[in-house]
Length: 220
Ligand SMILES: [Zn+2]
Image 1 (cartoon, rainbow, N blue to C red):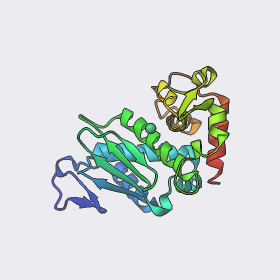
Image 2: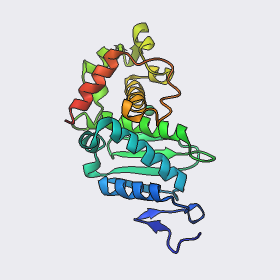
Image 3: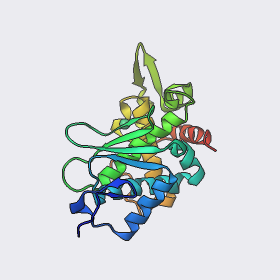
Image 4: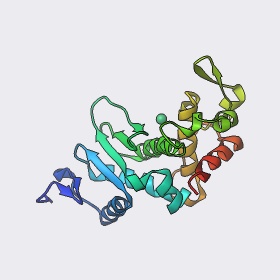
């Protein structure tokens, strides 16, 4: 079925993929009203599905008020679809997440990636001003076991063991985003509907979860 226009609620729609399900359309509309924006190259139906699924899981885990504040929805949260070789990343200063869905259909891995990127946005918004909460004080780095060696962050062996994934070992920001994604996916409100966090290699330790709670409390 072809649509007469290429936008729906201001959202660019790939006409060949405009086979909207009622549920997805309703969810997209709901999140537009809550302050989400979609920009970039033509979005496909399943890609909208990825973002609203991710946002719905975040909201289930955090609640409406914290989600609104933590995601900066009051000043809009932009999802910018990119293609080509660029990777997905979050721009805290613009409250924007660039998403590259790659080839093939968007899937559950893309949902995990989106929640991870939302974690970076939360990390940025937890810190007043430009920067990230996770490296602005010692709360996160001490809890997770990060130590500065010159200009580089080094994770203690105990910190490695308590990290949710190997990806979290990269630096305190990745650790925060991975812990956030794991927290959302494993939250009782999202299980068993979610498949959990399939790439989780370890159980995030209590110290990380407590530190994440401290960050989320800044939005309460
Ligand atoms: Zn990241």
